[in-house]
Each structure stands twice: as structure tokens, then as C-alpha cells.
Length: 498
Ligand code: SF4
Image (cartoon, rainbow, N blue to C red; front, side):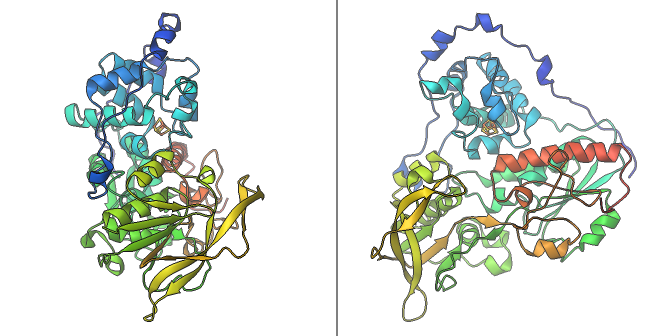
């Protein structure tokens, strides 16, 4: 590929950014400022529409909330953030009226700040480590991140930032979800030619097909790909590597490959009749409930029927997405079944609160036993058993144990299984030279994300198992730095086994 000239608009490095004098910060006064959140839709309204729950912060209120940050030099929030956003640095600019500057701070370290601000479990990450949060609500880091970056898009859209010259090297990225986006943005910015391969009809992976509109609107996903296109990134949709494109072809045509196809195989319950009509995997339920037929593969393009009673099994964010989607599809009764208590649930507290506000019922300490069928063989309910908590298991969480003679039935005309995702088994056959572990996850050098095949890197859920958007993004960005070094060091002889 010939070199060409590109505009350079380098962001200001964090190390050079002006910092407040810690002695000049009146921490006591800042700690007295009441916390603020942006307005949100009333539950009775939002349970009947697909719009996001929260509106954006008012700029003046956002500035006040940013001023609650006490600018601690150690910044534990930054350390707890998987992409290490300079949160105090951004909020210092915001409180001094430089909203676009604050947005640029987030963009320095994150290719998806608008989405991470909406989707991260902040109580476990940045906000969970906020010093202000020890005695008061933490600074609303995620919602301020969304505010400054969305404000910037509307008022001062960031220009594409590219290297001065093209490198002449090319990278194939398999998958267009958060890990692929993080890598593509960084690699294209560094001057490499990037082609993304996406099996579904539209790009975005989990961000488009796994996250409902009421958490993350789809135009925001479209904007990400418009920006990647402006950087010269090509996206080939409806293209399944190993099927439409043989994996060997990538080896022949590109100087490096980044595998970022995620973990998309839904876990199964292993109980009777779980494939009966009316029983759905979480992905099928979410995409058929949330997307238009033309946005879906033909096999999934039929809209879902109307339901009276939906039971969702699971305890993470995907199960919350399913129960809240069921309410928006009009189901009057929606029940979540989870075998432990709320304290052991892995998803975001806020999502659970929203689900309860929207009328979802929770059956804790309840395990599914059998899908009940009607005369036509379709789902009519779920037989369950009550559980109690025993000793901790290998994950450290209390192990649920069955209570004898505690069976009961929940009537339902739809059942959704949302108990987690695994790496797709077929990837072992598509790229057999790439080493995997016993759970089919790709094995990489954690420093470089390099697999055992020279020139083939991997990151995100196909390496970690199903995890957060922000951890996949962090992997993609880290892999991009390693791929860039690999290509520039001239050690790019293709696809030898290491
Ligand atoms: Fe917090 Fe996530 Fe934003 Fe990091 S990316 S600052 S963890 S919301």
C-alpha cells in the first residue's frame, strides 16, 4: 500500500496537562457539595418505550458534579478504570468550562467513552474506588463521561486523528465489537490499513446486537463506524471468517491478524425441554426483540410474538437486558429466576434497580428443574426448586443447595436462558493452529496479546471469556500497540508457529 499524507491532530498527552496544586484544593468544601445525577425517564413511561433511561446532564449541573472531585493525586478511580482514563484531569477541565477538552481527555485513553460511560459497572470500577464515595455518593464519573463526550459530538465534533504517513502494512480484524473497534481505531490512527470482518449484517458486534436501545442507542454505534470509516477502516459485513473467507486467506493477504470474535455461544441449562418452542437463548431474544428484521440474519429475522408471561433465568447484566426487553415487548408479567441471592448477582446494581422499577419480579434462591410443555409441545411454564446458600464454591460465592420438597411452577409462555456465554467451539476448527485452553479461550501472551502463531493476536471475550465492554476495549487497544510495534519492528514474517 503506498504511503500518503494524513493530518496529525495529536491529543495533548496527559503528562503535560496542567494540574491543580493539591494544596489549593479545598477538599472539605468540595465534600459538602450535594451529589447530582442527570434526569431520567419515569419507570411507567420508559417501560413502554425503547429510549435510553437517562437524559444528558445539564451543563451547569455537570460542572457542579465535576467539582465534587477532590482531585486526589493518587487517583484510585483512574487505576481502577480498565483503560486508565485520567478522570480527575477531565473533571478539572470540565469544572473550568472546557467541556470539549474534558472529552478529549477521555478519548486519549478510550475509543468508546460514550459507551463505557453508559455500560461499565462503575460501582466495581472507577466509582467504586472514588474517595468521595467513602462517605457520600461517589462522583458520577460514568454519566459525566457520557455528558462531555456527547456534548463534544454535538458542539465541537472531534476531527479524525491519523498518522502523518501510511505504514504500508495491513491488519485483518475478525469481529467488530468493542475489542475490534479499540484495535481498529488505534491501528488506523497509527497509519496501518485495517479491514474488519463481521459475520452479522451490520457492524458493532455486542454493541449493536447485544445491548438494547434503552441502554445504548444504535445511532451511537453508527457514529463509531462513521469515524472508523473516516480513518480509512474498511468493514466487511455478512462475512464469516472460516466460511465466506477462509482463515488462510487472511494469512496470505494481511501482515497481522487480530482475533476479536468474542464469546457468543450461550450456555445451556441442561434441563428437559429447553429447546421447546417458546424457549429462547438470550441473544436470539434480544436481537429479535430489539432490532429490525433487515438488521438481522435471515434465520433470526422473524419478530417475536406477543407474550403474556416471560421467565428469564440468569443473574448478570444480560438477564436484566432480557427482562427489561420483555417488559418493553408488552409482557404484563416478567419474572427473573436466580439460584443465589441478590448479594451474589454479578451485574450492575443500577440495572437491577431499573428492572424492579419497571415491574419485573425477582425469584431469588430458585433453580430451574424442567421446562413445562402444553399439549402442542410449546412452553407453558417452568418447574423450579427453592435453594439455600451453603459453603463458598471455587468462585468464592456461596454455593446454592436445594431445599428438599420445595418444587413449584411458574406459568410462562416464553422462557429465556441468560446464564452466560462461552467461546464458540467452531473457532477451534477454523483456526486449529491457535492454542486454546480447556474452555476454548485463545491463549495469548498477556503483555502483547500475541498468540502462538506469529502475526496472529487476540483479545476481548475470545481470550477472557464473556466479560465487560471496557475490558474487551482495553484488550483491543493493548493489542493494537503490540501489533503496531510488531509491524514497525520488521518482524512481521507471516504466520509462523511460535
Ligand atoms: Fe469508569 Fe468505565 Fe469510564 Fe473507566 S471507562 S472511567 S471504568 S465508566
